Length: 222
Length: 222
DNA sequence: GCCTGATGTAAAAACCGTTTACATAAGAGG
DNA sequence: CCTCTTATGTAAACGGTTTTTACATCAGGC
Image (tube, rainbow over all chains, first blue to last red; front, side):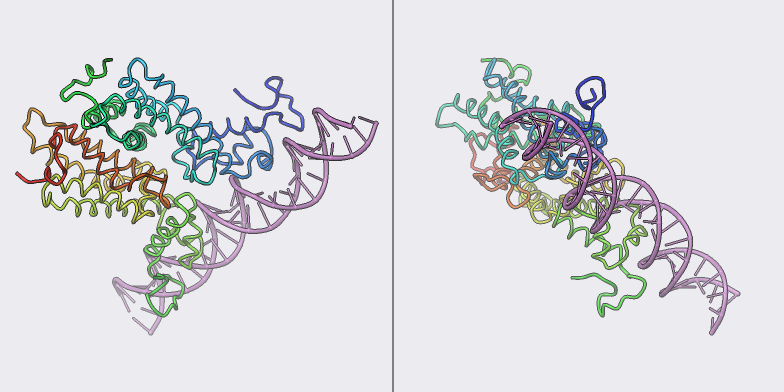
């Protein structure tokens, strides 16, 4: 899957033809291999077969490339979460659990994107596009929380924003602490199960699910 | 608070006299200013007034210095959490909440340590001393969870390890996402309150506190 | 066919991490 | 007191990175 020049032949002349994309692909590969700290602008250029100054025609500096990777990551992330939510099918409760699993899936299956998004030390406030992409990801979770809350009688309806913040933080904490690297810390259970149990207990605390439901049974539709 | 040479006079000859400590202090200052990624071995040496090769007499490489800062951070962290737990005073439930607040306090008040511990991309498994210091921090939380669980009748007693993992992940997620930098994302509430509400709801889901109890009442001892 | 803007190159400056050979203290023991 | 050993710091060098600057090449519109 080498992206040098026009897809085939390998004869690329003075101009690359697709350098911007090639650099992003190279960044993803390198971040996946050595983490966002070990990633190097010069290495990305080498990997794309251009001089070390060429990338500056497409990105202001090294951080701008990482930020672009992170932005794309957030866009994929939002789509991934939205696919898991699937408009609340088969039922909002099950779909909500699916979002949690999707969060961990993404952290495991796309470690390069996840690293660029959360472990590269970027401040989301500097880049408006990045900030907005992150906001769109969170919006999926918040919307799901709103749908779930709306099913409760108004007098015992929790604030949906708070609920989404709690679930986001729990998911992010589990992903960061236990679901990265080779296997993070040794756990007595899979991160997905840990998250599912946590969300279940939290929702029970909110009164969204019944008091003594077994997890497997509780995930059933209405 | 400049640590160059023997505390006073400033005349330090060929030897520094306290370089190891001076480097750690410099690392803390620099990490606080520019994050663990922007921290530089050469800068720490400059800040201590020695040549750029001198630090290698005290640390194998740059990562070893960061790891030592992280290790000290975990030791302070464990002490900070243990002080908050305070042997379960005035009652285990309140003391448990205090641990949560202490977690966020530490992340806010000691951002340099927190960064070195959690945001520097170190793998805890490489350095045994570091790994053990981290384990000691977590042990405080796990012990508190055990005490709290022991107060429940055995048939409805949740696994304390799982409970401590959930609270750890929630605290870490809130600290990472919302309680860092200037103020992280703009929140409708303080991070401490967000965490307290989350833990409260989680404990209610576990059946550790009554269904509709006010927090102040629920914290009463037996 | 020529001009212009976009894109890539080469070379250089400034910095970092790290190693190597050498310099200087400080203390132990005769 | 003098010497030897060890710990600690220096200077210089190597290879690598980031970023800038001046120049080269190409593509497309006129």
